[in-house]
Image 1 (cartoon, rainbow, N blue to C red):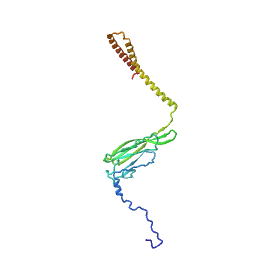
Image 2 (cartoon, rainbow, N blue to C red; image 1 turned 120 degrees about the vertical axis):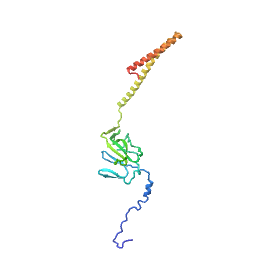
Image 3 (cartoon, rainbow, N blue to C red; image 1 turned 90 degrees about the horizontal axis):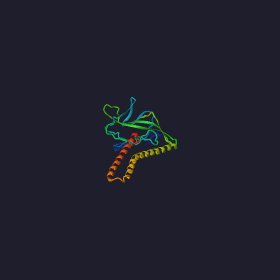
Image 4 (cartoon, helix red, strand yellow; image 1 turned 60 degrees about the vertical axis):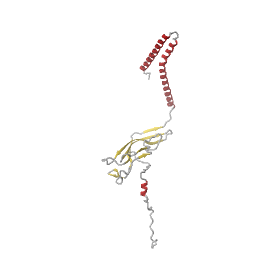
Length: 256
């Protein structure tokens, strides 16, 4: 109904959405047992620090970060998690992020899962001279259970990172012709040494064998009985000379 006084202007209707919380309880029940998919990036200073995912409301007290867990029961959450991808910097060829695909399932009733990360600055230069400044990292893992007497064991997943004082430089280069020829000579030299070693082993066996064959060819005029003793002597000579040659090479270090 308009005002009687024409100078009065009707108030502006607020654009607030009515019944905004309608169905909220039902939606919470439907999401029971589900997890959260968190993605994004953080821009931080080049100093040691941490980032974490934990239940409750965070605030600072006496310059200490704490979480308000009064409204959350210890059985009402689970810190099981899977890390699809975690990197400290831009991607470059050959980089390996050890936490990609890592997962952990909570067995203990309560506790804090910690990742201790060592970040190593890396400079990668490709074959065309393009440079990428990024980081690599190594990691160790530890689960800290919330035992009595540990007031600072806040539940959640914590990532503690620290920068390494060293820097890694990775560079792509074309191999020179001299480097190629060096590799070829190394391959040929290795094959030659292997062939020489094989021939030396064969020589130890061939010389007594040839001596034995020559003696057999001269046995045409021997009698049967004397031939038996002669063959036995030849075999004994073959074994003796072969053993002696092998022993000599072992003393010289040429037999393996």
